[in-house]
Image (cartoon, one colour):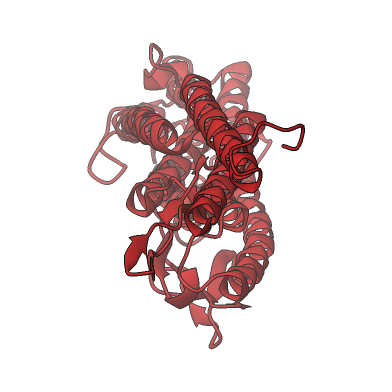
Length: 468
């Protein structure tokens, strides 16, 4: 009778274990389309054997807590690639915005097709026309009109660059706020996981934490370390502490002299320099590395043209017989020149077309002014050549950013597919498991039924009765 009781217990445990496995599989099927869900499998464990009347007796099977099928190394690779893809995409968008300012496209990169390029050409063309007809008032007025258009073109480009910069600054502040919310969530989940488990899988809670880290990876570059009790410690890519156990350390973002400053950790360490990864890394890369050289080049060109023209005009004689004055208003250095350059006069008689000793019909200085269009006045290059070089650099940087973004996204797709093939739910596989567990359940039920019949026979001493 003892052996029958043992066998009955084995059958009972088998029924319970297979029922648990069926429930796990059903839950997988139900969550097949749930974002961030990690497939679970039944965790069957053989019960310890025991001695009874000198014989070793089996004790059946039990189904412990389900195990999530996850590869932590692969998950971390997906997170790192998410950070790289988000950074490259953000930088690509910023540089494409710069291209739009100058009207550049993959098939349109010539400097004379841009607003600044065409207005520069028009200005020096007007000076050539003045050299051919120096005493004509309308030709002088055309020089001032072209100078005004050139100034406006520089102003507009500088303003639009400033708008992109301001937008990126605001974007950085917004990203930090979104990241801080996720940091608090991750720390809270760390605490719950530590209470629920001591080193074993925590299923749904780990899925929730992994989902939060995946979202955080879109915003900021991270490094992570697995700690005791399935905890995770997070730092920025340049070692600013973000999460330690159940504690989160909020990022802080502020604008200091027009630049974004990011601090992290309990000591509020400045991590702005060297922070990479995520959309915040891309934003900082655009603000600190990509946009300043473009703005500097634009300022240099505006300052070079204005100072060269002002200097040459001062060497000539205007229509009133006086020494020439500045045609452009410009600062004492190139800093901010593109945003501040302006027409200094609206009086066409102040254009100094003649040279000293010539009358109002003289054109020597007008010829010299027109020659500035082909002179190397901008860092050893002509105005047109310098602009063309600057635009080429912008186009090349934008093209590289676009190519890099495509590569990073392709790598992310590949890694995500690899991760999902391991951790995602396959309905075909779950259907196979359902069949397997159902058959096992039926077998255990049949065993239970046979033992029940044996019990009836034993109780009735083999006599067929109505008692079962």
